[in-house]
Length: 202
Image (cartoon, rainbow, N blue to C red; front, side):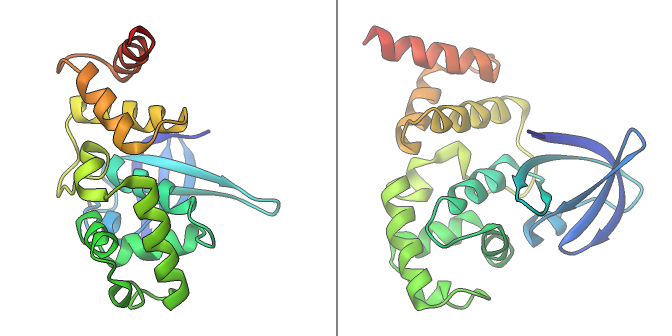
């Protein structure tokens, strides 16, 4: 799995960008929330990525912030929501606005996103609410809105939360565990280890 790339930005043509990493050009699809904050062509940029493997293609999706990738991955778990629709959601509203739609059951706002009808909007509200227990309050670091890349320590905490979710913990529980284990200086691996140790000791 390709999880992170750092290289020279060669092309910006939404939703596609081309990143030169050591002489290898990676074609990456990204939401507009990432495109808005990309540097100029020719400059260096770091992206967190998610690789989707299909029978006919391997597609790499890139994000400037871990928050965007975390929401993208959660959206992919919703019935009937694929990568294209997840990109459309991230291109149409930020995590704060999306969380408001979920909490307020605002299906009308979601149907304004291209490709989302009433039934899909209702399914998004039901499944995302059940998975997250409310995006804005419970996921904290993982989905907190930000206009700039997160700090190194916030990145470590966000990575730890994502890993704990991948291990099967509910996002609110994963966030609580990671925060309790973080002392402001640990790496993501150390946070995960401390969080799991605390669970086994309880």
